[in-house]
Image (cartoon, rainbow, N blue to C red; front, side):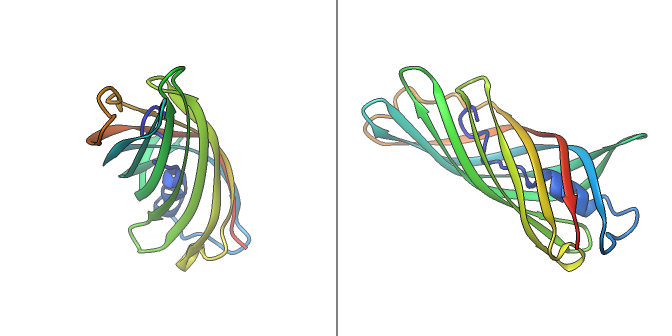
Length: 179
């Protein structure tokens, strides 16, 4: 989660599933998809220890699901997230919660955690925690990778630095089940 990579959490895939409705989700449906989201966000980086900075913010963007004919829009995601960066070695860890909304208003909720190296990325787990409408009771998850342009950590000491960030979130194999 380079900087604010994680927050970004990852419900993008879920959103992609929710919005990929060429047909509505059916009861008892199970599938695995590959998806990604291009996102942007804003937050604050604050020095929270002698050698630690913490970024707190929200990211949002469009989720796309990959199909045989290319990516299709799956919906919109928004994820509040927190990323902690060790300013000595660049290690980072983050967590966030996401909401994905399909064009028909159905939603998928998820949480993510990840670890990585600042300015390189963050890899972790993405878990579907529920949904509404046609996604009621959805469950599942998979791995998630986050990349961002979050760089500003120098000068964080003594106050907060407002950051605008952007990046990509990728789910190589997101599995889901609808009861």
